[in-house]
Image (cartoon, rainbow over all chains, first blue to last red; front, side, top):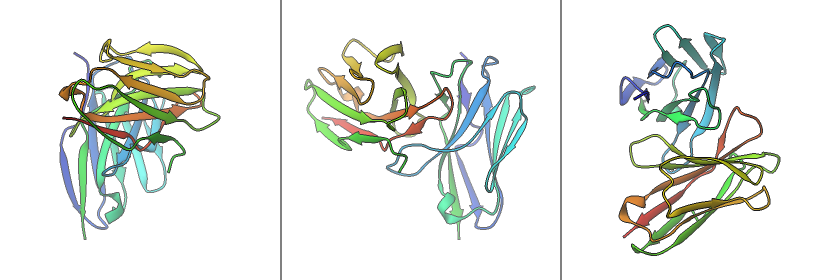
Length: 112
Length: 112
């Protein structure tokens, strides 16, 4: 069936390096995507979103890239900091904004 | 703190007991969502309210689960005759539009 997934379950980077977290989706009806950050014991926290009429969106230290041709989404974090250590989820709406579908997540660990 | 609160934060119960969780969304948000998250997985959609109307339910929401939002503000999620497989984090989210959903801290349920 159609699903949202992540290429790597874990990612370890050195403090100050850039991080890239990838996500593959297969539902071609999806037109809205969100990246969430979840720290241990907390609910997911919104990082950045993007609609399908865009291929890039930038926030503060974060950039989301959307490649609709290959159904791929990525989150780039610039100058990664220890506070960025968390699990990162991509979520798609499957064409229905009432039902965000999450991938399994990537655990980002930032080494000092 | 996103402004969405959930109570209790933790609940331990014996198999067969009923449990009820409460979610208080951000006050101006008319949309409220319930998700379930198991260890190592992303949140899974359970149900969605727009104001007091429950507009969508996942097939994950068995007959033992019921959710209400009687006045279009806070919501409750009740699980009857709990089973060990119900052990999970139950997340509530709210939104004003069909966009960004703000998540609460979750209620962690352990069924013994």
